[in-house]
Length: 143
Ligand SMILES: Cc1cc2nc3c(=O)[nH]c(=O)nc-3n(C[C@H](O)[C@H](O)[C@H](O)COP(=O)(O)O)c2cc1C
Ligand SMILES: Nc1ncnc2c1ncn2[C@@H]1O[C@H](COP(=O)(O)OP(=O)(O)OP(=O)(O)O)[C@@H](O)[C@H]1O
Image 1 (cartoon, rainbow, N blue to C red):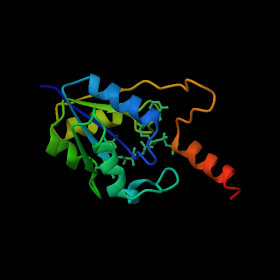
Image 2: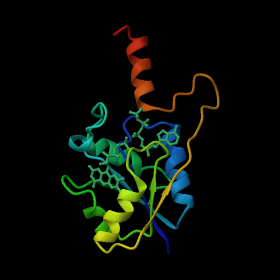
Image 3: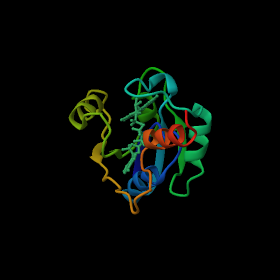
């Protein structure tokens, strides 16, 4: 039984999210997703949807076994609880693989770290980024 963890903000779900989670699910038998808390999203604009709504939507996807809201202070607490075999980082996530590997080793967690692939648009109007969806909304509503 291989347990895999994926993580992210997942605001306004789009096909790029589905691609990442499907790929992460294909790397093991059970996929757990950690949904970042709003307060911990500091490297870009805060999510529009609440923590609970983002978690519930991710949990409703067929490839996801369990979706968890992340820990408020220490991102390694859910990992210690879930005890995954593999953490799959998104293709553009700012987290550094080597830094995560050494933090896991320091806590005695035996877990691999891999990076997922990117999904490119399949047709010109396909939007594969939450930021791009928000820009489109602002543009089309003349905000
Ligand atoms: C291994 C790992 C574990 C994480 N665990 C948590 C967590 O427990 N709580 C949380 O709020 N965010 C957690 N995050 C999310 C990050 O803190 C960050 O907010 C996240 O990468 C969201 O940005 P993104 O959607 O651009 O990837 C985790 C990220 C990684 C890589
Ligand atoms: N087009 C895509 N192809 C593959 N993975 C994606 C794609 N878009 C997002 N992801 C992955 O989904 C996870 C969550 O992404 P996130 O919530 O940051 O969405 P986003 O659309 O990239 O947001 P933003 O536009 O605000 O940067 C990340 O691991 C990210 O790499």
